[in-house]
Length: 88
Image (cartoon, rainbow, N blue to C red; front, side):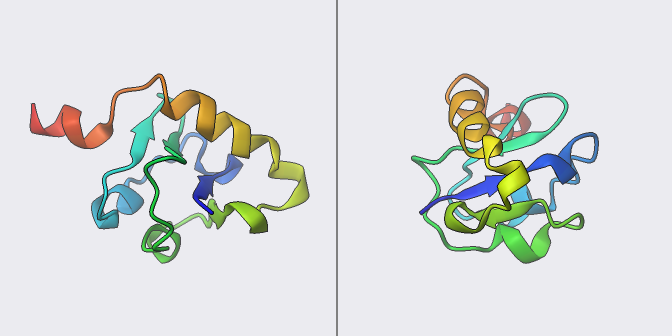
């Protein structure tokens, strides 16, 4: 199961999660970051790195934020990878 970035990330985008992600599956949607579910290897490195506790394993996303499972899937597939942008 992939990890999901939820509502607490909105407006914060600390990017600590991006720095520790070994597979660079974090994408930037402007207002918040998203995890590409097909690229996430479920290592969990991003969870303790997030200062606002916005990242959960998909199966543990709190009920009010379950909509973020699909948001992560939709947004991540259409956005540029933040790692790629920084390397350019």
